[in-house]
Image (cartoon, rainbow, N blue to C red; front, top):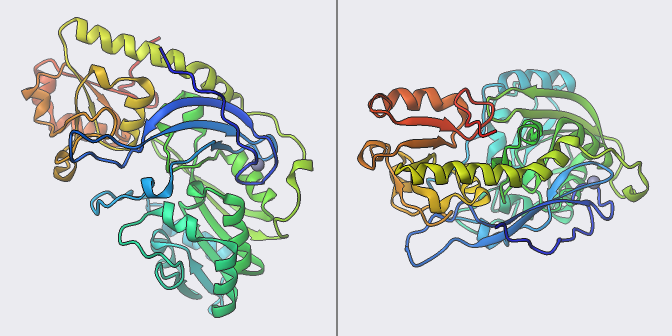
Length: 406
Ligand SMILES: [Zn+2]
């Protein structure tokens, strides 16, 4: 049975600060997905993960987040690559929308902004220095640390030192912000009046629609759709100038360009109540049934003397195994990264093995938790496994190999 935690309370929306967001669902205690285990006697840190939905800006958000020191990891090989294929277009559109001229000054928040800054052919670009500007002192860090350091006070000091900027770029940062209202207010501080902000976030609408629980990630505090991104940024005092959806087999990206129109000090509790997202409501209602169905499927494989593995030792596999309660049914997690194979997986402490294990361990079903866009390549690399009767299925409803249980 699924353990029921007492309903958690989030007092204020992390984006617009309106009071009493609506409780959505509780996923239980989940392992921090980057805590690969070196010592089998140890376990990954676990955090209760649940969602609230703001009644005013509509943004779905984590109720509680793991402590920062639990999110930070020391694995130099663990990097999250964001797509760059659309950035030539984004750079051209930014130059046009912002009417960029050589005298304009553009600032990027983190290393993730360099690929776009490098494509801008006009204006002066500057990337904030993690140590000198953001005050980051740890050797290995990610966006969890950048977002925590990005405060109004710090932005105000930087704007005084450097002078306010005409454009600020902050890609793949906002969804990590524990206090997004503070994060966006800091962006205001960094910009001239009417200055331009560039944001890019993952779009969760397909995951909400498809009941894809792997969208849950303790590092993503905010879960935007097109509608809630625009509402959230409007509540934070920005006017939308440009919006683009970048398609991806797993998760579309939302590119947004807007300008500052007012400060975010307004009390958003008096703003209109927005309708709840019907897909989010259905997701909350139905994922426990999906859990029962996939556990019954996994149990059936075991009863028949078969073996089950999950392919892809990433955060999505970790979430899938934990939320669906699959660890007890799995032989191993398969991943060809030599670095990961030196550790056990955070979810269930499962062994991580290379794809040779598909044959060596006589795995009968292998459940993909990788981007459906790379499944074909993996299948063709493992043709002998398929020829000998092994089956690949995918946890993603958008995949042609989707596991259909009902
Ligand atoms: Zn809100």
